[in-house]
Image (cartoon, rainbow, N blue to C red; front, side, top):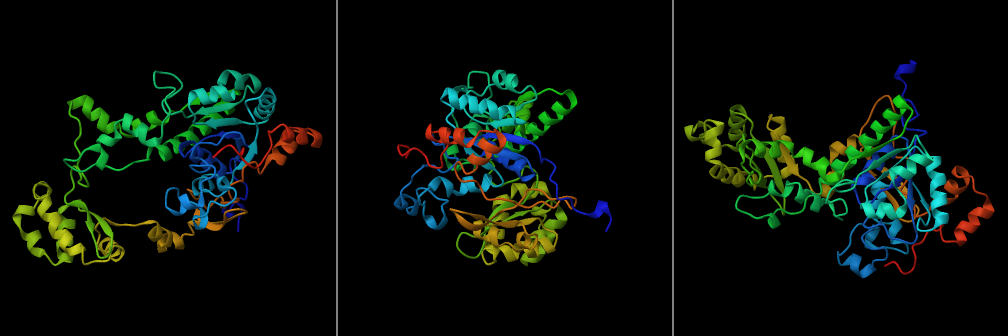
Length: 438
């Protein structure tokens, strides 16, 4: 085997150190992507403050509340002695990362932080502006400590403007940029649309790209950079066609349910069993004829009233009923495979169990096993993209709170054992949240 055909063991971001001040999902997803490809991502945490929903909705939820379904995502529906180390949301996005603790509300904590900044390549955050101001995170400060520093800021609405201090979740941001006016059923109002959180993962990808662009800028200029990537604006960009469409026509889009603006029929149809469904899209006349043949309803394809896509759109309700009468007798996954084999776009609506057991993902080895010392051994979603040139797998389970304090304080920052013990006594170093935090 020649050298070019061998998969390298070195990941492309090895040697890059990133400080992680992220919360909830958007920011943590950005640093997750970078950690997966070799960056040393250090979560800068505190035992004095609970980080929003990042390590679980509550620091110490009762077992009764969890078992009642009020809060999910704990192994065996048990929050355990340290729930913040067992929450599914955190343990998924924090794999391959490290955790250290420091109290940034004290001058001593700010000195430790400045030392860490001087020995790192950058920082990513997605907090409210006021929160970062209190933590001492600003471009003016960080760039003086480390002129080559890359700072990526992902606040909801940016670091300027009248909304800059607003506190939000993904659903709020999506509402404000118009997403909730786009998905829903005809005649319904927004509260019937459910909750969308697409802005978070979309922003995470954008944040990771922004940081990589910052590294490229530093390589080209020798200087650091601050990059602003507001989550709401990033998602508004993905709604561009609809917003530009309004600017051209003055028409606000109406709810269309599962219908397509051109293809017909398109819908999500009930299948055999409880809450089983399939999505089917017919893109041309040939697919329509094939679907009718499979359904044993050639009379539909031979009916001139359904002969073109325009005519099928006009008769969509009637066609939907005919398709539903047929799909209700079918297994959704078997039907998906059969329709795909016949060239018809179709996808079973899978629940989490279906996706986890899906033979396609299983055969590709998508799910990877990690063992967490407090959460146990489970399979996790794997690395998001693959390359034959780089043998990349998940390497480490999510860190427990403060798990890497000794490494960060001693190996990176160079503090002595005596200094380490002092910082521990002063409340910077720890693995448990303050007892007052519920």
